[in-house]
Image (cartoon, rainbow, N blue to C red; front, top):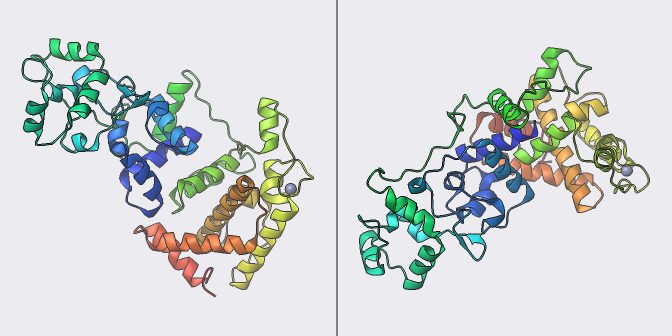
Length: 373
Ligand SMILES: [Zn+2]
């Protein structure tokens, strides 16, 4: 399920934020205190002062759908708050945040009155400008301050909530695909439990392998997403969109003559066939012998006698599919030369990741000289 992949991406980002392919989202979310803090805030995506990619927006939307926010005024962060706005955007002040000033209670004295500037600067050891301080206080709805003031004697010190889904920590092992998938189904489709399979030609053990093995491949989540959509026949090719939404669509952007079905786009199109042929010849020249790919191989991956070669080839197929997907968006024809360059970049990324699967794939790419001459 698509939602599960988005949440798995979020888990990986929370766990391995320092890995090289999270450099961009780390940089982006740092502007609002980092992803971990953001998930604890009562944010609204359209009000965040960030330029987010569609993928990151979808991840946050998925999180908002899954996460149930227990409202408690003195634990609500001021920052990234959908009702505390400055010029229609939520606020974030790094200096305050570093000083642990994130709750409204931090702005109030023991009697529930807002500190004056001198008291505030003295208490937190900062040198905040009067206009900034006034701006923050002005943007907090009066009703929120009153709510906290009225309950000041009963409330303990403010605490940020934990990032949990149905009482399970999102980075806990228990929060696996099965758990997320079931929770998502229960949340979005209460009462509906059947999972539709699109892999009827395989037996159950193989289906399970096809559905799960790639999740552990050391490839970026966006690559896996393209693979996931093809696997489940939900890749948004033009003909798919036409069938679902009755839109008028254009022909394949590579050849301009055929309808753009997913099969055509990723396999049958002359431009793409040539790419797969060259890739197949290239692999043969590196002593990786196998029959030419079928569409089924491209869609689901393939099974070979040698586990290592199977692992290598299936990763390469997913990288190639992502490259085709990228060419489609860039409206440029796929070229084998450019694909080899993608392999080069991919191998460089792998070399920087300390993880058994990444190291294994890196060694295999080296062994079969997929990048070096
Ligand atoms: Zn075509």
